[in-house]
Length: 149
Image (tube, rainbow, N blue to C red; front, side, top):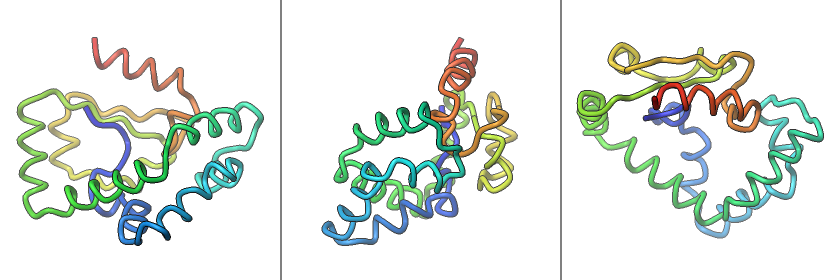
């Protein structure tokens, strides 16, 4: 199962930027986010409401800088390997893969045509963007429940 995210290095723009940093710079860059949840939301084009601020604060509180940095490095390392596409194609043939993307980001999501054609489902969640799990968690949960049953 995959959701809207870093399918290719083209999508991994933030991961690429922080993965290349030394640990001190990465820590400073990543630790800005929990200190400025309104800026975090605004950066993704999410309306700043008290409910969204609460969701952002909660989500950001559970993302230690080192975990985010190490994840970014793993994304870049794995996605950048020459064998990544072949590995992904093997996964798609062996297990059901469900693609889920927010309506606001579907146009720029770098998913190869073979992946969209091969995926068990390809769902566009209306009215949300990249941060659909913050914007409309119940709707995303319903989509996930549907594809898992």
